[in-house]
Length: 367
Image (cartoon, rainbow, N blue to C red; front, side, top):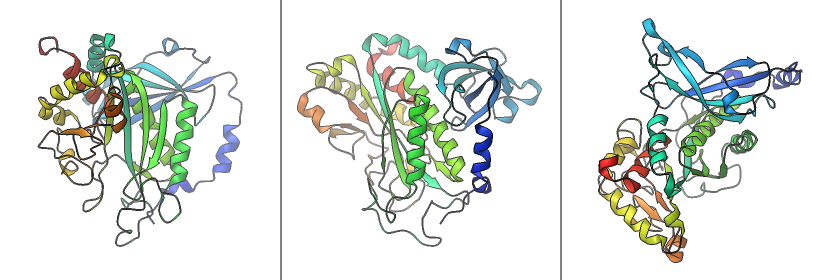
């Protein structure tokens, strides 16, 4: 059994007695942002005199970017620009979570802020009514770096009984999964499902469908909630694309894509056209489908364990070993969506959705 953090053993009944205290009409607002790694999330809290009714009621704030790999100490103040508001499932109503963009001292987007460029592309393609759904896989670990509930030495039984499993011998960490699901629903995150994955201690949740820029916003907040729930349980949610080397599945963030034309009668033709465009830009997409220009995904996209090869582009109906999968019912109905199976679990959803929208819907000269 992997070890839990000491803070998870604190008396939660004592904490709850404080959570029940009146806030005297005040509101706590937690500002959430992406740090300089492009993967990590940070947050801090401020008090407001009244409950904000919309994102426009949340003031800009700032933070020390030299402590988040986003600025030098000699010019460290960074701007936090609120972009989307959620209910706070940890401190409850009327308190809020607010996702923020990060701007530098000159009010230009920070290097890790890809929301700005994504939003510009989504504005250009908005007449296509593009929808996304993202399937976030993750793996539970103890703070000692050992997979949650794996034997202290050696390995669990080989893959086979764990996918969508039930039972203490197969499903590890369901409490965390169910608490995260509830937290997302309370917050207003558009979570639409969850399941145990192929590797033991690995799970997945799905967010969507979301239009345009909202996809990235929703997934980043869902990730924040996952890390925060795991903190309470004293375990770690890893988004490593290949958390355990060997004969074990990796972790991806499969991205489902649909435009208005794809959803209408005869939409399969538009899906096929998009796949042709994606095939011509395979390398460019691989470079943005994990935070390290393909270096993480190269461990995962081997052509084994339900993946395509990182070197080659492929597509097929109901083919989970392809780069792009067309679901069987889409092939039968002649319309719907396609699934890009290449993005890694630790991808930036703003970069993924931007690349897909750009490749499929914009001419090169207007990109």
